[in-house]
Amino acid sequence: MLITIYLIAITAEAMSGALAAGRRNMDIFGVAFIAFVTALGGGTIRDMVLGHFPIGWTQHPPYIYLVISAGLVTTLFARFMHHLKTVFLVLDALGLIAFSLIGCEVALGMGYAPVVVIMAGMITGIFGGILRDVLCNQVPVVFRQELYASVSLAVCSLYLVLRDLGLGTEANTLISFGLGLALRLCAIWRGWKLPTFSYRQRWD
Image (cartoon, rainbow, N blue to C red):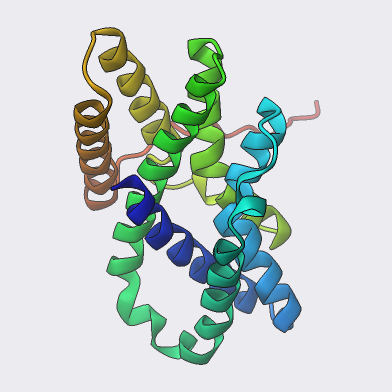
């Protein structure tokens, strides 16, 4: 199940990356690069941090073709994409949860401590979007809109708790995925956000 959702998610993330590149008037190479980084950057950073080699996408060349093709195709239909905003939000939510759980599994398979497993899941879930926004000279969306990174944190934590309670991997994945998706969609619908911090230096 996660692999199917993963493929859908990296396609959607590549398309979001292409749209971000288009808003910055990038050329076709820039579009392809941003699409690739958005879709596969989180897993790449995770593998580099954990020492998990070879890096995932290097062993699955079709993933490269998929995300670059999705990015380039987006340039042809960009004018219609605003009609699919809700679809993109749902696909992005699916991707966030799937990426987070996959990241946890990778770290668990390498025997890392729980806090590292959680960080690995979060890196996988959110770093593609962070790289996209930084490269497009924007404050990353994950730091300023509805609950996003905190949803990844909650999903990774729940997955570990249920695992420690002896729940099987398949049931754990289904429960964690379902609750995480519900939380993210509720955050979008209700506009839930974390408290913000605003600071202005005063010189007396």
